Length: 215
View: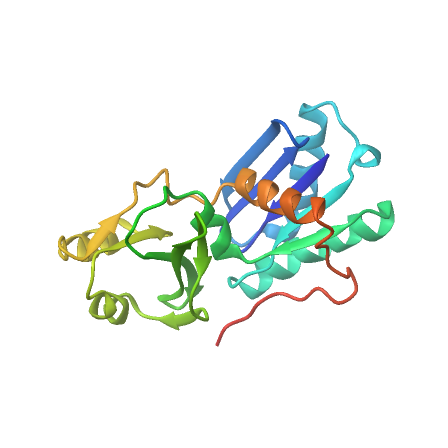
């Protein structure tokens, strides 16, 4: 059984996965109270599924880009559980969690997370070997700059306000906006990604795993 933790932004997610079913999933908006809210939420997630920490076989954690404080809280807790329970830890880039949830299309994909001060962390993906794969390094840009860069039909998903969706929606020819539900980072997908990596032995060193901070 694997526990997934995502505290990359103000949207926080926890999921519990046994390899066949998502036993529990919880996503909420946190007003930068990750440190206070996270551990009790993990305990509640386990309790609802009638499971204990002793039954966990692995931890999957989102490693950014995202909020410095949020990432630190999530990764610290994941490391703590991994070391205390002697179970593998798998770090997954945050934008990969968004990408894997999208339908496969011939058009490229842009995945977005909040980077603070009105900026966006943007990852670019294309379908390669029947899955979304990152094609460029994550960059921090404004919505206006992103809009100008979209010169071909592109699927866009991620944390977007109503105003941002309206601005991008004006470029109907080049912007395919994912629905709000598809734009939510679901920890269930983080759990699945972590499980796949764990099955092939691609685990991380708990002492060395570090968040992705993009300037």
